[in-house]
Image (cartoon, rainbow, N blue to C red):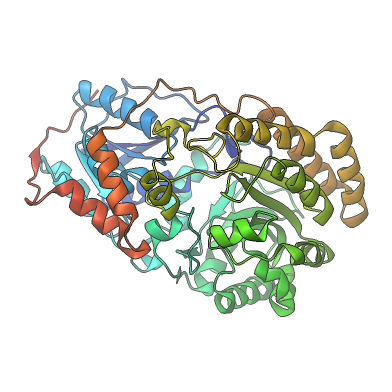
Length: 498
C-alpha cells in the first residue's frame, strides 16, 4: 500500500483577506505540494485550516506544512503535536525558507525555497526512513509545476462555495523590481520566469469545462503572480493568447500601475477579460515611495485609475502606513487621496519588516523592532518604533483609515459612482466587498489568535545577517547559517501513523 501524506496550510488568524468577500482563494501552495506528492505515488489529504478543522488523530505517515510568517507559530505548534504522536513533519514555505534554523527546531526536515524539483527526493528519503535536516530548492522552469490536470482531484473535492474566486493559478514567478519591504524577490528571485501563453490558455480551457459553471456565465480566475505586468512583453503575449482563444473567462490579478500607462497593453488586457487589478500604490507621498525603492508617481494615480475604469476594469488599491517620512496626518491624506483617485476598494496595511527583506535588515540594525512574535507579522500591527509618531498612533491610524474609507455613507456614494461605470451586478459585488472590509477590518486588527511566541536569539541573529544579502542570495545565506560549518547528516525517522 502506498504511503500517505497530509498537507496542511495553518490558519492565518482572525484578520486577513480570506475573510473578505471575493478574496477567499484556494490554497495554491498546499495544492501544489499535494499534486507533487501524488506525482510520486503517495496518497494525500489536504487541510486548509482557515476553513476546516484538523483531525490530529487521522492516520497518516508524514505531514507537510507550508507557512508564511504570520502563521508560523501555529505551524510550529501543529508540528509539535504531530511529532508527539510519532508522525514526522516536513516544513516549507516563505517563513521556513527565511529562517530554516528556526523551522528545524520544530520539524524533522525543512525545504528552503521552491520545492517542485526536490520534493520527490524529500518523499523518497522519508520513505527510506532518513530525512535530511535541510533541502535546498531551486528556481526552475515553471513547466515543473503541477498543472490543472494534476490538481483536478483536489478541485473536485472542494465543497461548493468554499472559495471565491474558485480558480487561482500562476503564470509567472519572481519580480524585476526591488522594493525594500517585499519578500517575493527573495523567495522567487529578482527577475521573472514564465509559463508559456499556450500552456496558460490550455489550462484556462480545461477550467471553463469543469462542472458547476452556469450556462452563459464566465469563470472567474485570480492570477496569483506578484506583478502580472512586470514583464510587459510577456503580459501582452499572454493577453493576446487568452483573447484569441475566445474563452468565457474573467480574471483578476496583481499588477503595477504601469500597465495602465501602456494603451496597447491595456487594450489587450481588456480583450482578454480583465475585470479587476490589485495595484500596490503603497503611498501617496513621493518621499515614502523613494524610501521604499518604489517607482510610482502619485501625481499620475488619478489619470491611470481613470484609464482602467474606462476599460471597465475595477481597481483595488494597496496603501502602506509607517514609512519614516509619514507623520500623523498621513492617514487622512491617504484616505482622501484613495477616494479622490477613485479606487473601488482599498487595502490599508502597516509597514511590516518581513524576514529576509531590506526593511527588516534596516529596522533591526537600528534597534527599532520591538516585537518579534511572528504571529503579529500580518501587516496590521506596528512592530517597530516609527520615526514621527508613536506605535500606538500608527495602530490607531490604521483602524481610523478603515472606519473612514468604509463608513456606510461613503460606501453608498462609492456604489452610486460604480453604477455609473459598470453593470449593477458588478457594482453590487463591490458593495459587498466594501461591507466585508468594514466588518472584518474596522475592529480586531490586533487579534492574532495564538499564544505568544518568542524566537531563539540565534535564529534572529542569523536572520539579520541573511537579510543583508542581495535579494538573489538571501535563501542561500539563510541555509548556510542554519546548517553551520558541518554538512548536515540525515536523521533516522520512522514514518508514523497518528
